[in-house]
Image (cartoon, rainbow, N blue to C red; front, top):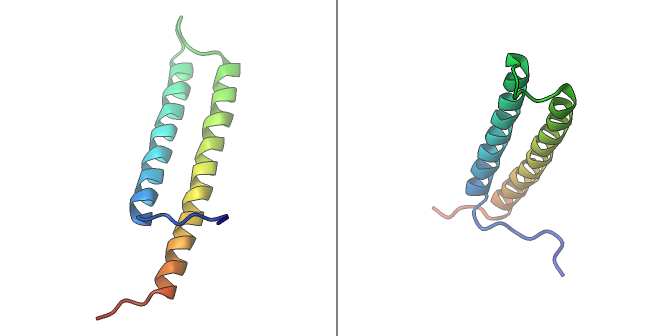
Length: 84
């Protein structure tokens, strides 16, 4: 069984990983800005810390997967030279 499945379109997957990272960072910004604004419905400091750890951890994980995908696409490009 193949341990590393090949992605058919690595450029699209890298673009999607970038979009996911930006969306998660935007969610983190929303949590932190709600905490800084304060008010009755603002999250507590514990919620902000736990949310930051989870969201930043998710961004790091997706970034790691994107880097592996980038390396895979570069290796495939070296193996298959283009015919002119």
